[in-house]
Length: 331
Image 1 (cartoon, rainbow, N blue to C red):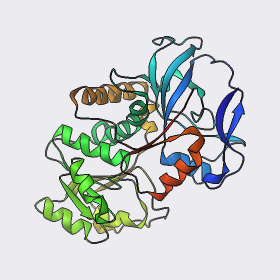
Image 2 (image 1 turned 90 degrees about the vertical axis):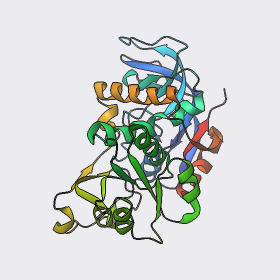
Image 3 (image 1 turned 60 degrees about the vertical axis):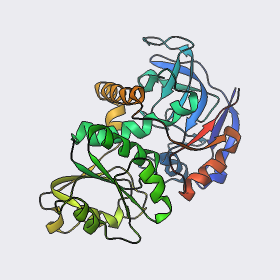
Image 4 (image 1 turned 120 degrees about the vertical axis):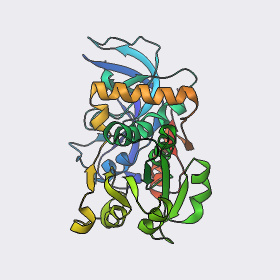
């Protein structure tokens, strides 16, 4: 029996329960991981509340897709890992099938990466999802190049901060957006070339001014909803708007043809990379290179204990963090 976070109905953070549950042994293609740290993601808030792109299949349900820990047992057919290896789990599976909010977790070996030397468990639970998400859209799919301008919405999120660093790594120009001026200095310190405060400024107009009138080659958007039309106006002809989240919680109408002409809107999810063996290998190499050089690093806003999981979810929903929220597990 291991302590496991479960919920017996959809709802707010108060539905989360820390309970004893059976875990069993890893099957073919699986690993048993001692979980030392868990990276929290917006997907878990949506899954818990019944608003995720995938519904809960049955209750009690479990949560979590990103963690760091140590391999304790190896299932049949798994190669490349040994008991005692320090590893990270990346989101590459349905939370209806696997989950990591627990002291120990069985996960598919295809979703596990070796943890680079010098990266502790908290860092290992905080680094992969943000960087792989931003890499997959901007570099792997978008072919972001030196000199390109990229507008990053929700820029103080862990993914937004990773996108800023990735843009700088390839020589592109990251333009961060944020609702209020409260996070402006933090975003500039994080590497944003410019910051647009959406409550005070016209995004399209400001981006045009910053890019000599041409607009940005890319927009990397976590918000979606009605604001997509304004973001399309910030794009250069031929530019692409990647939508990877729905933080607005609102549906948006199809933008006017005048804004769409010559521009693209592309939906994107992390699983496009993490569920593709070759794509994940490319992402791992790219991120690991950035970690070795010091260009990339995990950005952790706050750490909670496993018994504080409901409080950690409340903190995430408040939206005040800059970087990743991590939950540690005592053994």
